[in-house]
Image 1: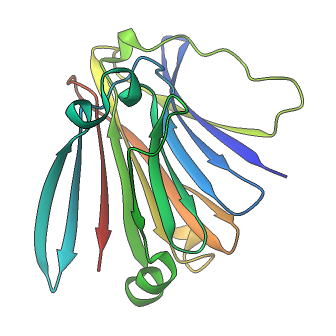
Image 2 (image 1 turned 60 degrees about the vertical axis):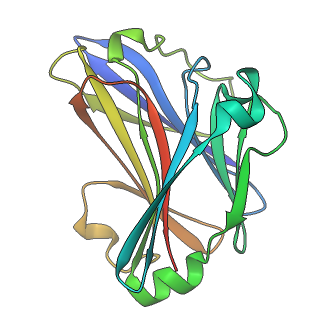
Length: 196
């Protein structure tokens, strides 16, 4: 049965929807921000090849148009395919992600990094549908004038699950680690990282 993970911010009892992780029945994993108006005009990426970091930015707004880049989310499909979609449109970006190979060799594969808009601009959290299998992660904030950064990484299943304060879940023979923390307020960003 599929599962949803909802990441919320909380300040003085006010909960706001920040991000979600969807674990699908076929072993796929999706990650996105809860802000439906979030726009990703460009997608930044970095790849490490033989210890050298290569960075690239792709201008999605110019290629796909304004509407196509709202409400984006990444999905990993076993065994090595991932894509970026927004608003149910065709793929904005896709590629191969050798999760099993990199995690086996290095123990961790950094995947998604996202930063929210300033927290005061996030919508208040509303409970999901009744009967929906959801896990809630609350991030307590010192104030609402900050942004929140999300990190989702693939990690070794069960090997060191007890040694981290971050949320870990095993799904479809793989494991992910989800962490979030507050940062100085900034414009929202989304980027992915992989190693070859």
